[in-house]
Amino acid sequence: MSPPELRSSLRWLPPSLEPWGSAGSGRDVAVLMSGGVDSSVAALLLKEAGRKVLGVTMKVPVANGCTATRPCCGADAALVCRTLGVPHYFVDVVQPFEALVIAPFRRAYAEGRTPSPCVDCNAALKFGLVWDAIEERFGVRHVATGHYARVGSVAGQVRLARAADAAKDQSYFLYGVPARRLPFLLLPLGELAKAAVRALARKAGLPVAEKQESMELCFAGEGDYRHALEGEAGRRSGPILDTAGRVLGQHEGIAGFTLGQRRGLGIAAGKPLYVTAISLEANSVTVGSREDACWRRVRAGEANVLAPDRLAAGERLWGKVRSLGEPAPCTVLSLSDATLSVEFDEPQFAPAPGQRLVLYDAQGAIVAGGVIEADDNLARGPACCGTLTRPGVSPLRRGHELLII
Image 1 (cartoon, one colour):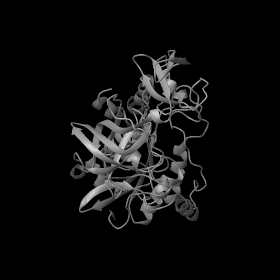
Image 2: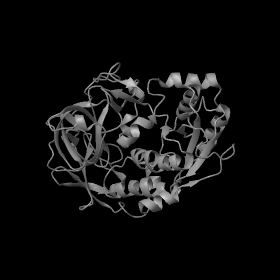
Image 3: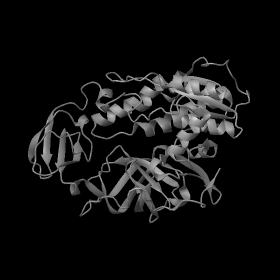
Image 4: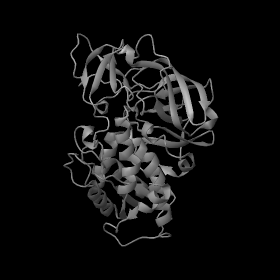
């Protein structure tokens, strides 16, 4: 679908429990609500701060073959809004979600890459088409979410930064927000721990106060992500090779593998084996030691730059190649168009093509991020990474350097 077709395919549904609002209705912030406790408390905090809140829930499709058993989360969001006394609306994003999230998800696995659909949803839908639609329909410029991250000012520049609670930080998933949107993005939970958020929900009597977190893909339901894949793409059988090219076994399709995978390889060996490479052209999966799955240099394309003043060859930054874990020290090697390359001080385990490289400065503010690309010329590490910092301990400075706005 073309961009105009995607925009026109968004459809506002009748308001859940209140009459229609309109541009100029006095609302000044729209909260994107999933029906969970986090986005519900984000709406609560903004209302208590005197903001004129509007709740918005995206109606997303369910992929063929998924095993979702939970009721519609939007119903919970609507009930929370009624409790708070704020209007709530659904926006039907089924068609653009299929085009911008599900189709790339399926295509990536079919081509031997590991997608990040939550990043795609945030960048293309929530902070793209849906934000545009909110501005057009209601005249509201500010959007808020329940993500654990912070927007603040550093030396007069608006920055997107890590949450105060490192264990809950979700800034990795938000790096794709357009820089022009940052001054209008509100993240009320950035300074809070999860326990404090639940306590606030209980105190306010929100009906989702005890609702459990959902870890599955919203469009794939519970269990295996493969339920969301369809067709024969990436499902042709082929060889499983060792790093010397010897055949160890057969796989049933490269879509079932990701770089760094250890379990479910379908072969027996006297030592742990990890996926070290996936070839679409050869329809092969290569396995080796953990060290074989480690790289020091990582290249990323489709870069989104949020702090151009901090992104230059030779700049010392901190990078993440997956959502979990702490950022690790690295050096920017090169920049060209929308591509960047970095070299980590220590080898990083399984920087999978299709996943994201996100770079932070020493204050924990995002500098840039992009889609990891395969490159056989990039350097591996002589010995594998492991965790560079103790669990729960961040090497990045946080605190007074970031002025929350």
